[in-house]
Amino acid sequence: MDKIIAVKDKKFALSISAEEIKKNVKRLADQINSDFEGKEVLFVGVLNGSFMFASDLIKLITVPCKVCFMKVSSYEGTESSGKVRQLIGLTEDVRNRNVVVIEDIVDTGLTMTDVLHQLQAMEPASLRLASLIFKPESFRGNYNVDYVGFRIPNDFIVGYGLDYDGYGRNLPEIYTIFDC
Image (cartoon, rainbow, N blue to C red):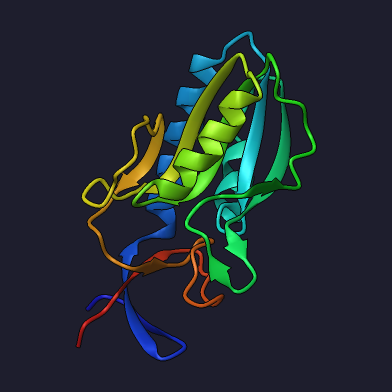
């Protein structure tokens, strides 16, 4: 029987094991190392969700690189504006640099549309996106997700940095919401 866990008031079933995650993170790192051979890369992790993926990915990068993190803000008071207003904490100049954004999950793609647009306006030499999880069924963006760890259905998931109301980020596997 599949492993079932509870996070807050919901039940989740194991859907992606820690070993599968490790294997796919290695595959993505190998692809990035090949694509940027002989070049320097600036990795920009999007917090909070990407922290585990970013950490494991960066450990496998062999090309010269720097790493920074940012948060995005789409709130005005207590309400979401639906638009990303700020890239909080981006401390590196991206102009004329090869930039790879590290994201935990791309579902509708609307937040990342704004993030990529703002970064592109800063004139990087190249701009690519690495996402551990991609939900093609719900994607409405008009850009490529260059490095994809897993393509999954439009299910709610937790673990490996992904959360349910702030909980579950610490899980080493990924779990899908379980309907009893």
